[in-house]
Image (cartoon, rainbow, N blue to C red; front, side):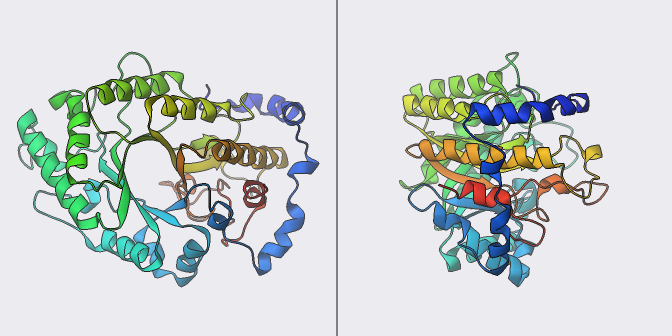
Length: 380
């Protein structure tokens, strides 16, 4: 399925939208939550409260955001789960051999403990990162051998899980290992794969299982699964093979970075989630959405408008509504839904090297107030 929609098709897509809504029994009127925006200025029920009995609702948080009392209160009101944006990635936590930078990650862990929040462990191994443990020395001219890599991986995973195991019970053990097409099943152009082949994945899960509690959930996390059948097949075929080998994998995470019209544009009821959930049921594992956002525009150069076009805003409301409907109807295997950011002012979609961009991918506006997306997600 498409990941980017050419701009030349936008006028056509704007004409298709009413027919798409009609096909699903919706209408422009049924998606109009504008009348509820006024009440949100005063007070509203927090997002996670609507989903009690279904699954935790989370958000990605930078530790520095906790320094802002407004943001800290906003997080506590709307989310019962958080995940570190960067603080638990090895490049931040352990940038050099013997050098540990715990302070910022400890802030997030202490915040979760104090407020009884779930804290997701993202991530233990991210193969696209070129970290110190892959190299023989700081010159980074020669890769280590497999035995050295595995010893370093185990020590790293042990250290992290023992420090935060009291508060983290869902771990993204390996993040984004799978390839986009059927050329390979895993990304063979990473240094982890060059050193150890796919065994680096199974070893990571072996070590995580060794230091995990029984209640912990060990996840392999991937991106753009919804729009790429090859990657989906690569992921599930590998997981099935590893499970048969006795590797402990408790679930798969799919990130959920989506475009308003690009990802699954002709799957309005998100049957793709039903299919993912069914494949998880077949394997006896769980499914988690780990990095949700639905961007209005496809690329940075479009993000200069002062407000979203009405037809794209409507399509986004519709998409959020149908997406969460699909998650709820598969709540027997879905164990969480986490947004990658807090609101339209705190989202990776609007960060770039050239400054803050104009997109509106979240449920909350730049002041942290609910948008129509929020009411669509909570309208059940």
